[in-house]
Amino acid sequence: MEYRISRIIQESPRVRRFFLETVNFDFIPGQFVVLTHPDLPQGDNQRSYSIASINANQSELELCIVLNEKGLITPWLFQRNVGDHLHISEAQGAFNLKNDENAGPIVFIATGTGVAPFRSMIDASLEFTHSEVHLVFGNRFQQDILYREHWEALQNEHERFHFHPVLSREKATNCAFGYVHEIYESILRDHSDARIYVCGWQDMCKEARERLKLLGFNRKQYAFEQYD
Image: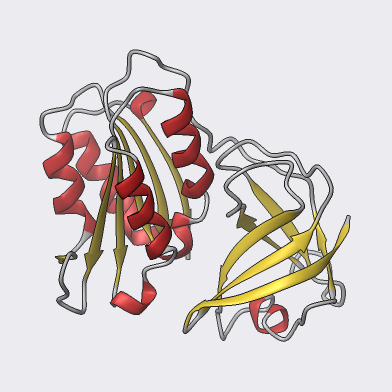
């Protein structure tokens, strides 16, 4: 289906939020859509992007996309303007919340635009569970922290939500310095009943998988979505 771009927000130097006009676009928190480039040959003309909208069935669908200067899709996409149309698939994917009322804390681990699907997943976790909810979000610099005001406001609104920003190239107030692994390990060490969701850069996901196994977590307790 083709959808009209209704808004574009420059969220950070290399990331834009694209809003598409929709009517009752339904999705399960954590799902993605496939965007098709109209002028590229089949096989090179599609990319998957996580849905960044908080709720389904709104008048806009949000995608949060980082520019890959060497890519085939995003340089073209970043030349689109409000009023242009994009071809988007229906919602797809099984990176979804597990139903487990007896679970311990829910820990979301993200880097970069990997935080996008967590907007709806965290909202659903706070609404439908009684668990403590943690977001461990790694970036290089403060300017890269996507949706920072949203996460800080959510933390002020919900006692059960805990925001843990982590920076690897800059020291800043209210941010840990280093990488996400040490932060989530400190949260999980005393919570063998936790549920864990990881989304972001491929290297981070690979290392997180190895560390979670060493901590004793099994495959049913964590889920991954990775990209380059």
